[in-house]
Amino acid sequence: MSHAPEDSGEPPERYRAPALDKGLDIIELLAATDLPLTQAEICKALGRSPNEIYRMLDRLVRRGYVSRTADQYELTLKLFALAHLQAPTRRLVSLATPLMRDFCRRAEQSSHLAIYGQGHVLVVAQVDSPTYWGLSIRVGSRIGLFNTGSGHVLLAFASPAERDLMIAEHEMVPGERIPADLAARLELVRGQGHERMESQQTAGVVNLSVPILGPRGAAIAAFTVPYMPRTDGLDAPGLPNVLDLMRQVAHELSQASGVVAEPAARAFEPNGGNRP
Image 1 (tube, one colour):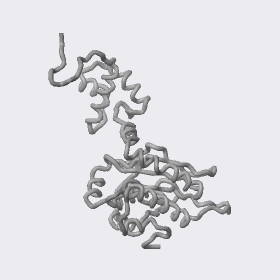
Image 2: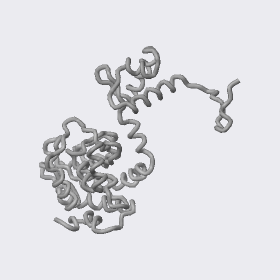
Image 3: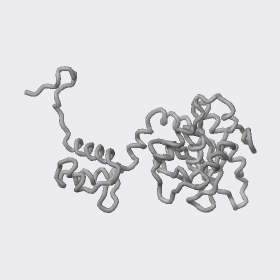
Protein backbone atom coordinates (compact mmCIF):
# COMPACT_ATOMS: atom_id res chain seq x y z
CA MET A 1 0.00 0.00 0.00
CA SER A 2 1.34 3.41 -0.93
CA HIS A 3 1.24 6.26 1.53
CA ALA A 4 1.69 10.01 1.24
CA PRO A 5 4.86 11.33 2.90
CA GLU A 6 4.30 11.60 6.65
CA ASP A 7 5.14 15.32 6.79
CA SER A 8 3.21 16.39 3.69
CA GLY A 9 -0.30 16.36 5.11
CA GLU A 10 -1.52 15.41 1.60
CA PRO A 11 -3.89 12.45 0.97
CA PRO A 12 -2.84 9.68 -1.41
CA GLU A 13 -3.31 10.40 -5.14
CA ARG A 14 -6.69 8.72 -5.37
CA TYR A 15 -8.19 10.56 -8.34
CA ARG A 16 -6.25 10.80 -11.54
CA ALA A 17 -7.04 12.68 -14.76
CA PRO A 18 -4.52 11.47 -17.37
CA ALA A 19 -5.87 13.70 -20.16
CA LEU A 20 -5.63 16.80 -17.96
CA ASP A 21 -2.11 15.79 -16.93
CA LYS A 22 -1.08 15.55 -20.59
CA GLY A 23 -2.51 18.98 -21.36
CA LEU A 24 -0.76 20.55 -18.39
CA ASP A 25 2.50 18.80 -19.32
CA ILE A 26 2.31 20.36 -22.80
CA ILE A 27 1.52 23.84 -21.46
CA GLU A 28 4.34 23.68 -18.91
CA LEU A 29 6.80 22.44 -21.54
CA LEU A 30 5.94 25.21 -24.01
CA ALA A 31 6.06 27.82 -21.24
CA ALA A 32 9.60 26.73 -20.35
CA THR A 33 10.80 26.76 -23.97
CA ASP A 34 11.92 29.92 -25.78
CA LEU A 35 11.29 28.61 -29.31
CA PRO A 36 8.25 26.88 -30.85
CA LEU A 37 8.35 23.07 -30.84
CA THR A 38 7.20 20.49 -33.35
CA GLN A 39 4.90 17.67 -32.33
CA ALA A 40 7.83 15.25 -32.52
CA GLU A 41 9.90 17.45 -30.21
CA ILE A 42 7.02 17.67 -27.73
CA CYS A 43 6.57 13.89 -27.76
CA LYS A 44 10.29 13.32 -27.20
CA ALA A 45 10.51 15.87 -24.37
CA LEU A 46 7.49 14.38 -22.57
CA GLY A 47 8.28 10.76 -23.33
CA ARG A 48 4.90 10.18 -24.93
CA SER A 49 3.72 8.77 -28.25
CA PRO A 50 2.33 10.94 -31.08
CA ASN A 51 -1.11 9.37 -30.61
CA GLU A 52 -1.15 10.54 -26.98
CA ILE A 53 -0.17 14.11 -27.89
CA TYR A 54 -1.96 14.83 -31.18
CA ARG A 55 -5.53 15.17 -29.92
CA MET A 56 -4.46 17.12 -26.85
CA LEU A 57 -2.51 19.59 -29.02
CA ASP A 58 -5.54 19.95 -31.30
CA ARG A 59 -7.79 20.80 -28.34
CA LEU A 60 -5.31 23.31 -26.92
CA VAL A 61 -5.09 25.02 -30.32
CA ARG A 62 -8.89 25.11 -30.70
CA ARG A 63 -9.31 26.57 -27.20
CA GLY A 64 -6.72 29.26 -27.92
CA TYR A 65 -4.05 28.24 -25.40
CA VAL A 66 -1.58 27.11 -28.08
CA SER A 67 -0.99 28.43 -31.59
CA ARG A 68 0.23 26.41 -34.55
CA THR A 69 2.38 27.79 -37.36
CA ALA A 70 3.35 25.29 -40.05
CA ASP A 71 4.31 22.26 -37.94
CA GLN A 72 5.40 24.13 -34.81
CA TYR A 73 3.50 24.92 -31.62
CA GLU A 74 3.86 27.70 -29.04
CA LEU A 75 1.81 29.19 -26.22
CA THR A 76 -0.53 32.08 -26.95
CA LEU A 77 -1.14 34.93 -24.49
CA LYS A 78 -4.43 33.45 -23.28
CA LEU A 79 -3.00 32.28 -19.95
CA PHE A 80 -1.32 35.66 -19.56
CA ALA A 81 -4.62 37.42 -20.23
CA LEU A 82 -6.47 35.16 -17.78
CA ALA A 83 -3.90 35.87 -15.10
CA HIS A 84 -4.49 39.58 -15.53
CA LEU A 85 -8.17 39.13 -14.85
CA GLN A 86 -7.13 38.78 -11.22
CA ALA A 87 -6.63 41.72 -8.86
CA PRO A 88 -5.21 44.33 -9.10
CA THR A 89 -5.75 44.45 -12.89
CA ARG A 90 -9.31 43.21 -12.48
CA ARG A 91 -9.97 46.00 -9.98
CA LEU A 92 -8.50 48.58 -12.37
CA VAL A 93 -10.68 47.33 -15.22
CA SER A 94 -13.73 47.35 -12.93
CA LEU A 95 -13.04 50.97 -11.98
CA ALA A 96 -12.18 52.04 -15.52
CA THR A 97 -15.06 50.49 -17.46
CA PRO A 98 -17.89 52.81 -16.35
CA LEU A 99 -15.62 55.85 -16.77
CA MET A 100 -14.64 54.66 -20.25
CA ARG A 101 -18.29 54.15 -21.21
CA ASP A 102 -19.16 57.66 -20.13
CA PHE A 103 -16.11 59.02 -21.92
CA CYS A 104 -16.97 57.24 -25.18
CA ARG A 105 -20.52 58.56 -25.00
CA ARG A 106 -19.29 62.14 -24.54
CA ALA A 107 -16.33 61.96 -26.93
CA GLU A 108 -18.06 59.83 -29.61
CA GLN A 109 -14.85 57.79 -29.93
CA SER A 110 -13.71 54.29 -29.02
CA SER A 111 -11.17 53.76 -26.25
CA HIS A 112 -9.08 51.04 -24.69
CA LEU A 113 -6.90 50.40 -21.67
CA ALA A 114 -3.49 48.69 -21.95
CA ILE A 115 -1.00 47.42 -19.40
CA TYR A 116 2.57 46.15 -19.61
CA GLY A 117 3.76 42.83 -18.21
CA GLN A 118 6.28 40.11 -18.99
CA GLY A 119 7.46 41.65 -22.22
CA HIS A 120 4.07 42.53 -23.69
CA VAL A 121 1.67 45.46 -23.99
CA LEU A 122 -1.73 43.87 -23.48
CA VAL A 123 -5.18 45.39 -24.04
CA VAL A 124 -7.27 44.63 -20.92
CA ALA A 125 -10.39 46.76 -21.56
CA GLN A 126 -12.16 48.13 -24.63
CA VAL A 127 -15.29 50.27 -25.10
CA ASP A 128 -16.74 51.02 -28.53
CA SER A 129 -17.92 54.36 -29.79
CA PRO A 130 -21.69 54.83 -29.39
CA THR A 131 -21.86 55.96 -33.02
CA TYR A 132 -21.91 53.59 -35.97
CA TRP A 133 -18.20 54.12 -36.70
CA GLY A 134 -15.02 53.70 -34.69
CA LEU A 135 -11.86 51.65 -34.34
CA SER A 136 -11.89 48.78 -31.82
CA ILE A 137 -8.97 46.79 -30.38
CA ARG A 138 -9.86 43.32 -29.09
CA VAL A 139 -9.37 42.66 -25.39
CA GLY A 140 -6.38 40.36 -24.99
CA SER A 141 -4.60 41.77 -28.06
CA ARG A 142 -0.84 42.19 -27.85
CA ILE A 143 0.25 45.53 -29.34
CA GLY A 144 3.56 47.27 -29.93
CA LEU A 145 5.64 48.96 -27.27
CA PHE A 146 7.59 51.20 -29.66
CA ASN A 147 5.00 52.03 -32.33
CA THR A 148 1.84 52.79 -30.34
CA GLY A 149 0.68 55.62 -28.12
CA SER A 150 0.02 53.15 -25.31
CA GLY A 151 3.56 51.83 -25.48
CA HIS A 152 5.11 55.31 -25.52
CA VAL A 153 3.12 56.35 -22.44
CA LEU A 154 4.00 53.19 -20.52
CA LEU A 155 7.69 53.74 -21.30
CA ALA A 156 7.69 57.49 -20.67
CA PHE A 157 6.10 57.13 -17.23
CA ALA A 158 8.38 54.34 -16.02
CA SER A 159 11.50 54.70 -13.90
CA PRO A 160 14.79 54.54 -15.86
CA ALA A 161 15.48 51.05 -14.51
CA GLU A 162 11.97 49.82 -15.35
CA ARG A 163 12.19 51.37 -18.81
CA ASP A 164 15.50 49.63 -19.56
CA LEU A 165 14.01 46.31 -18.46
CA MET A 166 10.88 46.83 -20.59
CA ILE A 167 12.97 47.59 -23.66
CA ALA A 168 15.25 44.61 -23.06
CA GLU A 169 12.52 42.01 -22.50
CA HIS A 170 9.87 43.25 -24.95
CA GLU A 171 8.88 40.77 -27.65
CA MET A 172 8.32 42.64 -30.91
CA VAL A 173 5.04 42.38 -32.78
CA PRO A 174 4.99 42.29 -36.61
CA GLY A 175 6.02 45.61 -38.15
CA GLU A 176 7.52 46.97 -34.93
CA ARG A 177 11.00 48.44 -34.54
CA ILE A 178 12.78 50.72 -32.09
CA PRO A 179 12.79 54.31 -33.48
CA ALA A 180 16.07 56.20 -33.51
CA ASP A 181 14.53 59.15 -31.64
CA LEU A 182 12.87 57.05 -28.92
CA ALA A 183 14.56 58.79 -25.97
CA ALA A 184 13.62 62.27 -27.21
CA ARG A 185 10.07 61.14 -27.94
CA LEU A 186 9.62 59.70 -24.46
CA GLU A 187 10.95 62.89 -22.90
CA LEU A 188 8.38 64.89 -24.89
CA VAL A 189 5.57 62.54 -23.86
CA ARG A 190 6.49 62.77 -20.20
CA GLY A 191 6.80 66.54 -20.36
CA GLN A 192 3.41 67.15 -21.96
CA GLY A 193 1.69 64.35 -20.04
CA HIS A 194 0.29 62.52 -23.06
CA GLU A 195 1.14 61.06 -26.45
CA ARG A 196 -0.34 62.31 -29.68
CA MET A 197 0.88 60.54 -32.80
CA GLU A 198 -0.28 59.43 -36.20
CA SER A 199 -1.19 55.76 -36.07
CA GLN A 200 1.51 53.54 -37.53
CA GLN A 201 -1.06 50.86 -38.26
CA THR A 202 -4.11 52.67 -39.68
CA ALA A 203 -4.22 55.68 -42.01
CA GLY A 204 -6.22 58.69 -40.88
CA VAL A 205 -6.15 57.74 -37.19
CA VAL A 206 -4.42 59.76 -34.46
CA ASN A 207 -3.44 57.85 -31.34
CA LEU A 208 -4.09 59.81 -28.14
CA SER A 209 -2.75 58.21 -24.95
CA VAL A 210 -2.54 59.31 -21.32
CA PRO A 211 -1.07 57.40 -18.36
CA ILE A 212 -2.91 55.98 -15.39
CA LEU A 213 -0.43 56.54 -12.57
CA GLY A 214 0.19 54.34 -9.56
CA PRO A 215 1.25 55.41 -6.07
CA ARG A 216 4.93 55.69 -7.08
CA GLY A 217 4.14 57.94 -10.02
CA ALA A 218 4.80 55.28 -12.68
CA ALA A 219 2.22 54.33 -15.28
CA ILE A 220 0.24 51.24 -14.31
CA ALA A 221 -1.81 51.48 -17.52
CA ALA A 222 -2.32 53.59 -20.62
CA PHE A 223 -5.73 54.99 -21.59
CA THR A 224 -5.81 55.33 -25.38
CA VAL A 225 -8.17 56.64 -28.02
CA PRO A 226 -7.65 55.86 -31.72
CA TYR A 227 -9.06 59.26 -32.63
CA MET A 228 -10.96 59.43 -35.92
CA PRO A 229 -11.95 62.95 -37.03
CA ARG A 230 -15.40 63.41 -38.53
CA THR A 231 -15.67 64.84 -42.03
CA ASP A 232 -19.47 64.87 -42.36
CA GLY A 233 -19.98 68.24 -40.67
CA LEU A 234 -21.77 66.85 -37.62
CA ASP A 235 -20.98 68.52 -34.32
CA ALA A 236 -18.71 66.10 -32.43
CA PRO A 237 -15.94 66.86 -29.92
CA GLY A 238 -12.68 67.82 -31.61
CA LEU A 239 -9.28 66.44 -30.73
CA PRO A 240 -8.43 69.02 -28.01
CA ASN A 241 -11.78 68.38 -26.31
CA VAL A 242 -11.32 64.62 -26.51
CA LEU A 243 -7.87 64.95 -24.96
CA ASP A 244 -9.29 67.02 -22.09
CA LEU A 245 -11.95 64.36 -21.47
CA MET A 246 -9.22 61.70 -21.47
CA ARG A 247 -7.23 63.63 -18.87
CA GLN A 248 -10.26 63.73 -16.61
CA VAL A 249 -10.67 59.94 -16.81
CA ALA A 250 -6.94 59.39 -16.22
CA HIS A 251 -6.91 61.79 -13.28
CA GLU A 252 -9.84 60.01 -11.62
CA LEU A 253 -8.34 56.56 -12.13
CA SER A 254 -4.93 57.73 -10.93
CA GLN A 255 -6.48 59.14 -7.77
CA ALA A 256 -8.26 55.83 -7.22
CA SER A 257 -4.86 54.15 -7.47
CA GLY A 258 -3.43 56.33 -4.72
CA VAL A 259 -1.75 59.14 -6.67
CA VAL A 260 -1.61 62.42 -4.79
CA ALA A 261 1.84 63.74 -5.67
CA GLU A 262 2.64 66.73 -7.85
CA PRO A 263 3.70 67.60 -10.45
CA ALA A 264 2.78 64.33 -12.18
CA ALA A 265 -0.92 64.76 -11.46
CA ARG A 266 -0.91 68.14 -13.21
CA ALA A 267 -0.51 66.31 -16.49
CA PHE A 268 -4.12 65.19 -16.09
CA GLU A 269 -5.66 68.56 -15.42
CA PRO A 270 -7.85 70.00 -18.18
CA ASN A 271 -5.76 71.84 -20.79
CA GLY A 272 -2.64 69.93 -19.81
CA GLY A 273 -1.70 71.59 -16.54
CA ASN A 274 1.91 72.27 -17.40
CA ARG A 275 1.92 72.60 -21.18
CA PRO A 276 -0.63 73.48 -23.82
